[in-house]
Image (cartoon, rainbow, N blue to C red):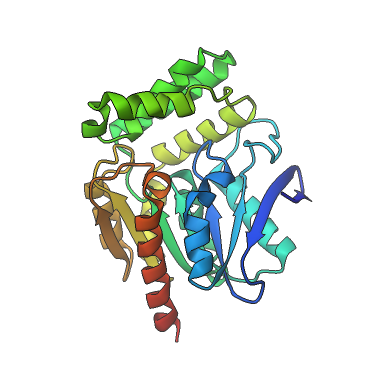
Length: 278
C-alpha cells in the first residue's frame, strides 16, 4: 500500500477500480484495518462501476500513530487531506461504526465534498452499553498493558448474534481466527478509544442531524448491540430525506460477515442518489 505524509500523520491507502469512475471512500471503524473492506465490499463496488478508496485511520498500522488523544475531527481532517492528495474534490462515503461518525461529520460540516453518505452501524444516540464498554476499553488502553490474546478475542464475541454464540462451531472458529492476532498497540489504541468515547458522550452533535442536506443511508443490523436498529431509526427520521434499512439476522460486523448483502444495499442506494443529484 502507498503511504502519504499529511501533517503529523502518515496514512496508508489503496485505490482500486477505474481511475475515471466516480469515487467511493470507505472509512474504517475503531481498530479496523482497511484490508477488511476487501472481504467483499470493495470488489462489489468496483464491479458496480466505482473507483474505491480505502485507508487505515491514524492509530492503525501501517498508518502512523501520533500521540493520543485523537478526535473525530482529527479523522475528518485526515480523510479530507487524503482526498486532496488524490485530487478528489467530492466523493461518496461509506463509514462503519466510528467511520460512520467521520462520514456523518463530513456530511454536516463539508457538504460540498459529499455526494452521498452511508452510515453503517453508527448513526444513533449512544446507548448506556456503548458508553460503558467504550469507557472500559479506554481505561484498559490507559493502563498500557496487554492482556492475553484470548481476552481480546472473546471481547469481540459481542458482535455476533446470540444464536451464533450458542453454536460451538461458530464460536470456536471465530476465536481461532481472532485469537492469534497480536494486541493492538498504543498510542493508536488509546487514541481511537478516546475519540470514540468523546463522540459517544456528546449529545450536542445529534442536534446537527437535521441540517444534513446530502443523500444519506442509515443502515442498521438486527442484532447490533452498539447501534441498535431502534436508535438508528430515530436518527434517520431526523435527517431530511434519509433512507433507513435494517438487515435481518446480522450484527455489528455485517459489512465483513455478510459483505455481499451489505454491498447490494450500498450499490442500490448510490444508484438512487445518482438520480437524485440529477
